[in-house]
Image (cartoon, rainbow, N blue to C red; front, side, top):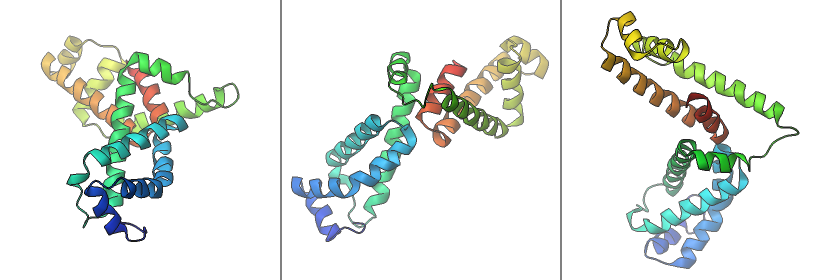
Length: 196
């Protein structure tokens, strides 16, 4: 295990169900993992919950851990995936979004931070659009930015209505995923509020 005295031995003991070894691993990795997850969500209490969830998952699947592979990479991959799933769940659930927005830290009146976040969202949104295929970009612009119906966009582009619908679904999915992966929880919530 990375920079932990007798790391592989402690990891092996945890895999076998030794709770004191698990506690040692938890104490060793908790601070760095907390900071890592805080970068994604920006909310200390949520980052702490995510850390606890990740370690609970580690304990539950400890028998599948290969002690010969770097534990840190495994731990951080689980943490990143759990953070993305949590962000997506919050962004897709109006009640959770509303509840979380009430607990977000704001600076002053909240206006300067909101402006910075909107600029960052706009930058990421433009980046995501620039990575769409030309056809998907055309469909997205016609339907979302110009307000055309699927039938109107299909007639303009000379493709079927179903093709327009498919391009829209794939475009929206790509934009969401891009912003989730390159932004943070607050941007994901902003995205959910703007697109839906």
